Length: 242
Ligand SMILES: NC(=O)c1ccc[n+]([C@@H]2O[C@H](COP(=O)([O-])OP(=O)(O)OC[C@H]3O[C@@H](n4cnc5c(N)ncnc54)[C@H](OP(=O)(O)O)[C@@H]3O)[C@@H](O)[C@H]2O)c1
Image (cartoon, rainbow, N blue to C red; front, side, top):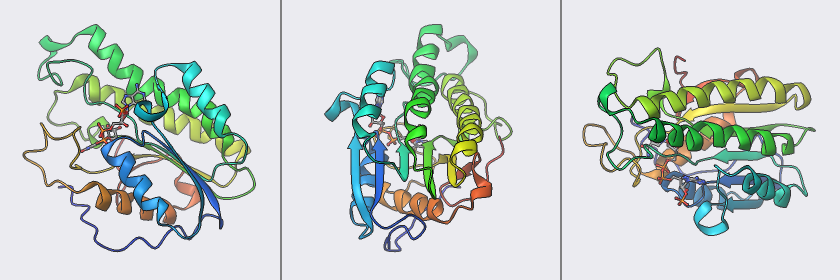
């Protein structure tokens, strides 16, 4: 059961350079805004760029918007990139409980936001990571995107969009690793976190507050060895089967 309850104070990144530059995409979300609150308190932070659709018109489904945003932050290299965007369903009816509820349009829209969008982010933002030293990038995925761990069925659009995201992150990590030898790029499951995203579906889960989940994930990221680039991990660093 997910329980990233983490009351330990955040002491900041020790593995990133002093004055590091951080970008959080989806900063208006429950988890994205928690990341921003926490990173802002890091005494070693140089600059935080908190970017969202709501506040900055950053639309992950529109490549021109992603490209424009990347160009706007490209002046200096990035050391920490977090993509915290995502949706549970693009439909009014909620995630599918049965194959009969599959709607091609809803499925495609879910993929557009959860998989194609992060791929476009990878295309335009990952090359901006600093080539000269350690950098970290996390794309928020979900344990239910694991194929090996799927025992319940249902939620087919969300599950498969996150499975696609995981493959995108893995593939991107290999390519970027060739030019950015110290980059660590992962797909990360945040746990079940109390945000508007999960409010209708978290009834049978232990739910974690966004700041506690955010601290867990940042601490995990800080400690990741370079050999773990391209992996699918939970908030606490435990590996999740593909
Ligand atoms: N909460 C959980 O329990 C849970 C569990 C597993 C995985 N996750 C994953 O964690 C991530 C964040 O979840 P959350 O709980 O923080 O959700 P949230 O509070 O609903 O936030 C979602 C974020 O995604 C952004 N977004 C949605 N569509 C977008 C688009 N087309 N272009 C740009 N931004 C877009 C939203 O921007 P606007 O504010 O502009 O709408 C918002 O910033 C998601 O990938 C989710 O799948 C969450």
